[in-house]
Image (cartoon, rainbow, N blue to C red; front, top):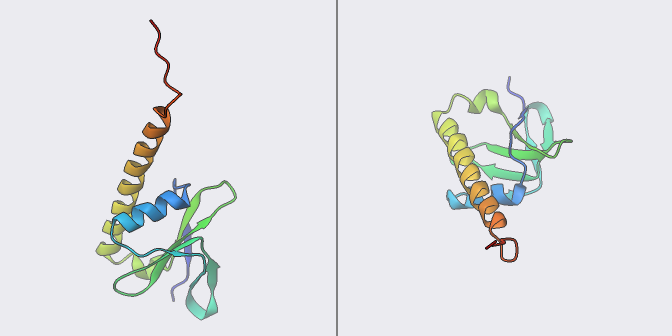
Length: 114
């Protein structure tokens, strides 16, 4: 019997996560519910339909982070899913670093002293 699991992550920016998912070639669905066993459901902020069936999603937690939501008991057997989650994490980290670097060097924020 499978059920929906909620796993904490370090991801915080849903817009940035959506950009990462799209850059990896995935279609992002905003909002909705993930359905589990026996009518169980969990609201999600972002949802991703997987190629071989099933969905994973991310829900906003009280601390502002995005938790991964899915039927992980069934999906964890998939090496493909493990690779996908690693790709998402790497892409998010790279996009976040580029975004923060752009913020650090935004016009008007750099001062040059003589």
